[in-house]
Image (cartoon, rainbow, N blue to C red; front, side, top):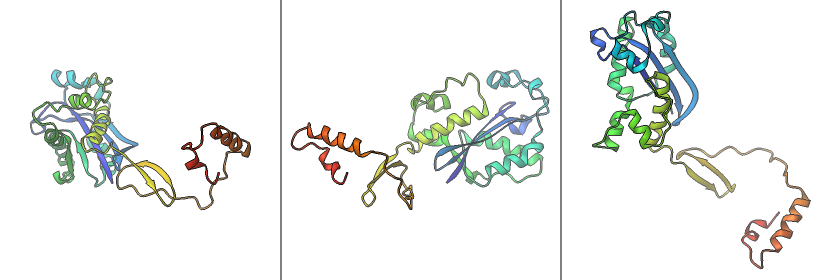
Length: 232
């Protein structure tokens, strides 16, 4: 299952009153594991940067002045997110700004059915306490020391880690397949790994086998190693 963890930075709090998108950061996850594929763009908002917003993310009017406009990045952005679920902290805020920008370039809005709001998940799992991203990082022992200011890509990377803990996907299973005696670590629902058509040649030499047998002989009459020694 492919999911996109997404975060944005903006010039303010209200997309309907002139505030604009200035940064988008996305992290691709497959089966709740980051793949290393990301999407990150700074965007020229075509307006000034209020001091309050600059204090949050540090993106100045001057820095953004030579960055692309939203209509210049929209195709790449939509191609990256595809039709997959979007994992967002306080999703109504970010999607409100994204849909406002999509409306300006005459593109269809992103439906809310695609959204996974980690703030709502956190409030259900941890009611009665603060569930900001920093709070969740502390709660799940996730290092957020790089987060001296808000940044869309960094925040999306941290949220991807938080999300794995929120949904319990970090708990892996140790699976022993009786037919192959193959031990693997994986997530619930994973399919067994494929077996080689031709097994690899053993790397243990006969001299090493003999040395191991000699060592086992020093352990007494019924060492546990004898349960695994047959056939070696």
